[in-house]
Image (cartoon, rainbow, N blue to C red):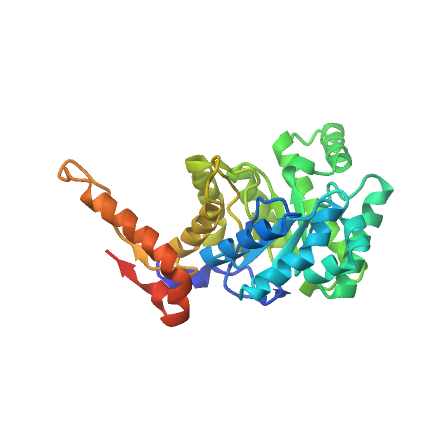
Length: 345
């Protein structure tokens, strides 16, 4: 399929949300996101991994902000990135206590380019809305966008029980997975409305609904695409390790992207012990490049091998070429316009 044909499939037009220097939605290039796995309080290690992920092709980098020490470290992490020439947006990932951390650490709130809020664990009962609105209020004051990140593992159980009971009372005959998928969409849309009532604009809200199974993710995002024009962040949660994580992520996100659904993506791979975190970035870039949605690096075409190939020379050569290209891309992108479009055979 040609690049023109793919672009014509992008019929789900969304609102543009600016995250730092990167536009999300509104027809902008689909952005790759990654997440560090360092202790955020370790400024040196976290800044180094942010830079490493950016050099690998990540357009945005997310870090955990889970305690006071992490929140205090954020401004220094951002400054180290800038000092090294790394300008990718820095996103703060908040669970449970984000309203407290952002309130206690205004420098952290200012340094971050976007806040991720999980409406399922921002609070319980009446405090859920109050604490959610606190984060939205801080985002409004600082002019920051938010991602309303609904997650299947922390979905509002009050909403689930309400829908389960209605299914029983009205004899609707829905399977439990259908009800949970519906609740994911409802949670995202209701949280978006609450964010708007809290003073945020449509230009400040990105939505995600992450689950672990490709089939459910496809159904949820197809439903979202018919009910909102907010930019959509795609990704499986807990995709898994290695081959399984790659295949499941590609099956889910490739389907949606080919339908024109999705404005930013993350391939959430579980790394092997001492593994390379950049692998999730490479996977996301390859997925987009395979659909001709973006170009990140020259594509290496290599023989898969068969009974006619008795030597490992071609395998070793292909591997060396791939490693070399990845190592040189940060430099080549600065020096040679269009190098990403090349094919190496």
